[in-house]
Image (cartoon, rainbow, N blue to C red; front, side, top):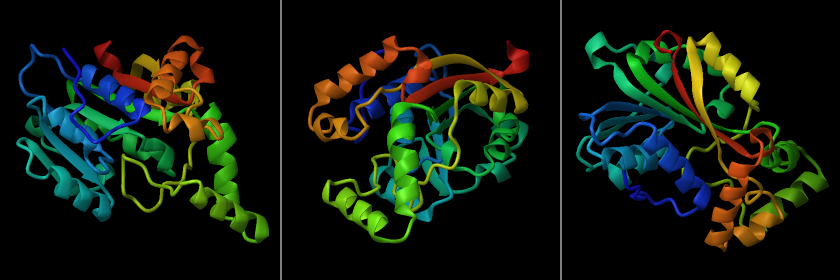
Length: 259
C-alpha cells in the first residue's frame, strides 16, 4: 500500500505515527473495516483512515476538539465524530470494532487501565488495537515534559519567567493532534509498564516501533521545527537506537487468546 498523508500533519514525527497506524490497520485485500478512534482530537487520524474507505468513528470527551474535527472533516463519507467517553461504551456484538486507535491518550489519564480494560468490550475477537504513547523515560519526557510541568504550575518569579520565555519562543501548548485545553502528562510509560497494562486488560503487545529521538527536545527543537529533513533524520535515528532511548512508542495489541 502506498502511503499518502491526507491530513494536516506537517511534522515528520506525526506523519511517521500516522503511517504506522494506517499500515497496521489497513489491508487492501480486506473489506471495509469498522474503526474506533479514542481521543480523536482534531480528527486527523480518523480522517486518514476514512480516506481508505473504512467506517470510522472518532470520539473525544472534549467538546472543543469534536467541534474542530467536525468543522474540518465532518463531511467526509464514512466518518463521524461525537463527544463520548470510551470507558462507558458497550456496543452490541454485531457493532463491535475491527480496530481501535488510542494514540497519545493514555499518558493523560489518571487511571488508564479503566480505559484499556474496556477494549475487550469494544473489539471483535480478531481485532487489533493501536496504542501510541511517549516514552516516559525518553529524552522528551525526561528533559522537557517533566521539568516544564513542574515549573508551569508553580508560583513565583521563576515559574512566571519560564512561562513567558516559553511563550516568546513559540511554545504555546498547542499541537496538530488536539484542541483540548488540558494536555498534562500524568503517566510516564516504559515498555515493561505498557506490557503490564496490556496484559492486565487481556492483551499482548505484538509489535513495537520507535517514534522520534530528540527533535522535540529544546534547544534542538528550535532548529528542527524549521527543517523537515532533520525531523526525518531524527525519526531514522530513533529506528536504529534501542527502544528505551527514544522519545515515543508505537505498539500493536491483540487479544491474548488470538496469539
